[in-house]
Length: 170
Ligand SMILES: Cc1cc2nc3c(=O)[nH]c(=O)nc-3n(C[C@H](O)[C@H](O)[C@H](O)COP(=O)(O)O)c2cc1C
Image (cartoon, rainbow, N blue to C red; front, side, top):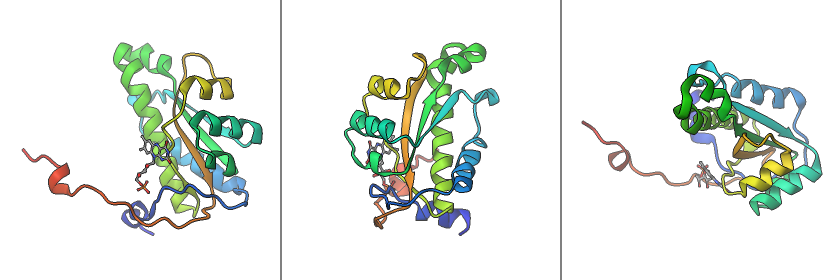
């Protein structure tokens, strides 16, 4: 698959096969995330790699989305606002750290697709409950939960706005 085919092939998957993710594949996904651009190259985000069933179940409850507990690995991308604030002040704290975490998670999703793995971006969750499940420091902000595994469904492509609607040409 070339990159454009990869982008087209990615789907949100919410059903996972009972199959482990090979450690080298998981590492490749994390390496891809680690190549994401970040403001000032500060990498103002953190990644939790969660395999412990008890914690995955807690994340599923925090999001009220049971498929999270069914994936063998769950990645949680957190913004680390303090890391960006040191150089960029309020803009780093309020914007760049969130963007850093978001871009890294997007890279992880695409890398997973390349490796025949499946993910879905989970953004609807109770932040405090997720932080507690991770025992994350109070100033880190969970941004995205990515359940990761082998797909047990083949979703069809979802629609997109037309470029005419989306793009504003000046
Ligand atoms: C910021 C964000 C939050 C999302 N939150 C959820 C979520 O909580 N649960 C879920 O099942 N999907 C969630 N999604 C996945 C979207 O529903 C999905 O990306 C969209 O419907 C397009 O489908 P596709 O990813 O298969 O192209 C989220 C996606 C984004 C980018």
